[in-house]
Image 1 (cartoon, rainbow, N blue to C red):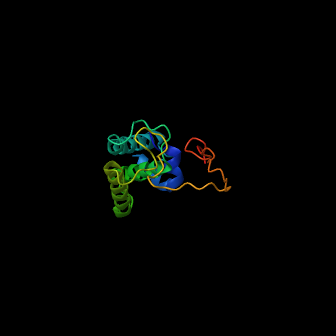
Image 2 (cartoon, rainbow, N blue to C red; image 1 turned 90 degrees about the horizontal axis):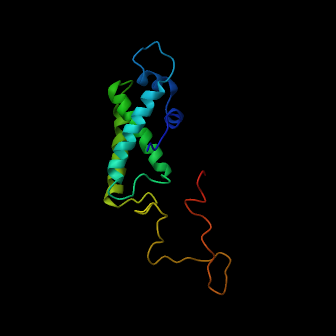
Image 3 (cartoon, helix red, strand yellow; image 1 turned 60 degrees about the vertical axis):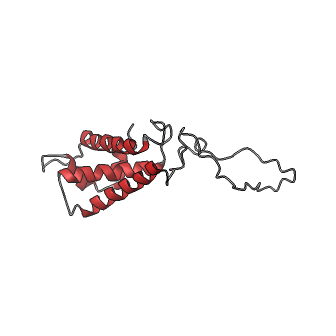
Length: 152
């Protein structure tokens, strides 16, 4: 499962850079979407390698952070093949993405998901306060969840 689409990558990076990185012919003026998709698929597979031990894959509702990580990893992989500029910035973004995924794999970062792809449980010892001040102490059901906020 790809965590980002070619359109996500196009929205994050300059068009001219993507044209140059995805084509062998310097006269080409359009982005090669197949090359972008392959880079994103490879990035998603790399991400899955970190998530596999902690979460049931494929993720039903991947967090938005994975979209950004997939784009950064894919861009680094593209630039490693055909460097346009100083590759140091792409390498730093890649290293940051891998460091975050390492923390997810170690369990120090959760991405807001539990192992069964459900909303993470409330933290032990947390206090839930009813905003309406209901004196009976009965709390309303949860208003916002990963499912109800999908698409926002």
